[in-house]
Image 1: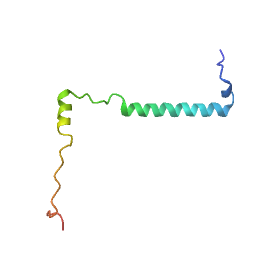
Image 2: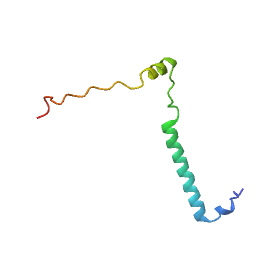
Image 3: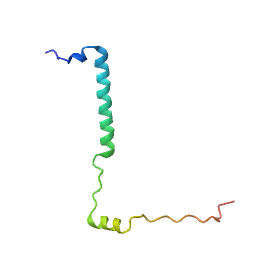
Image 4: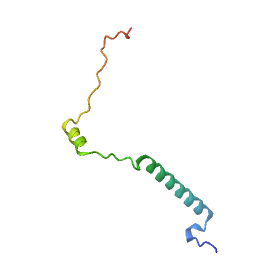
Length: 71
């Protein structure tokens, strides 16, 4: 059984461009799902309340300017 193509795909260049676009869209979708699928945080009420109560993360202490490593 012969596959019936739309009129714009009768030209070889149009088929090649269409195939390239489909492959690129599939690659973009795969990359998107690789980064964003299933990685949503599931916070509980206690974690949200703690985050609201102290919105700034604890800061690390900076080394003193007069350290023994500064020659």
